[in-house]
Image (cartoon, rainbow, N blue to C red):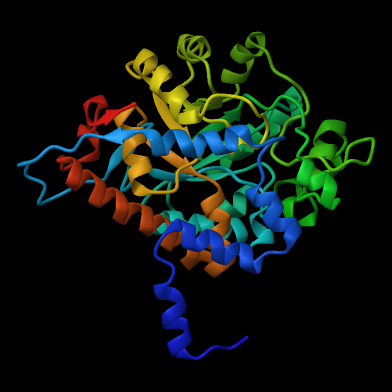
Length: 375
């Protein structure tokens, strides 16, 4: 539908928060897609808890500080990024826009931050890596050793700067909205990283199920999950696959965080995947407040699950995260306006974060600490 310039301006002026993008995107998506993006596991207790816990944190601003010039940059795994907000590995982006992950990678590069490519990407990991010169991380699940070795080595050759190992989804989850809708995000739009290697990769039954999104019982299988659980006994082997830094995603326990540091991982992401796989857990921000003080002098700590405002980013940084990652907002931005939509989502968070640190009384994000929040 063609709209006049005035209508376009009015619509753009109405998109000033992530909530605006969320509402606009769900108005454009099919019911199946909107249910896929918005849903959490089971009764969605943890989904609500993620947001409530962030909202319940009280900030403690200081006055008479020099905040005329502000610096939002930080470093992650040795790379400087312009904002402490990165894009999490999220499959199914081609369902939102024809450019899918390519658009998201370009938007991420436009803000000088990290883009993370999921295994179940719509485009090949190599094509995404070639799209921009910005830093990119590649995410791998708990598949067989042969499958993991294949993807890790391809990622290294393609120029990825780090590997994200998803640790907390050892088997496919059961997302009830997908069952009710008889829907799976996994179709030809999520086969990108398999193309050219079908004979080898699809011979693995777990990966085949992961790619096609149908279990042996013909029940839809949720995307983003592995098919073979790993144990701590596998870690030495996995670390030996590459000299790239490895970040463990899905850490929610202090002892697990300490052990990740002990065995030589380079980073952890405190995350419950936006409450998409398991219900009844603590909020991610609540867990971050416990974990970060115990390990952030030994290992880099990142955070995701529930970020909707720049102040949310500031709260996570105060509680010990080096940077945060966003997931659902990628889909909202892509659906509304492709690359520009994702860029604008990041820009909103950047603008709000800049405002937040100024009012808290600091001029760089690295100076945020626990004293600026009460939980």
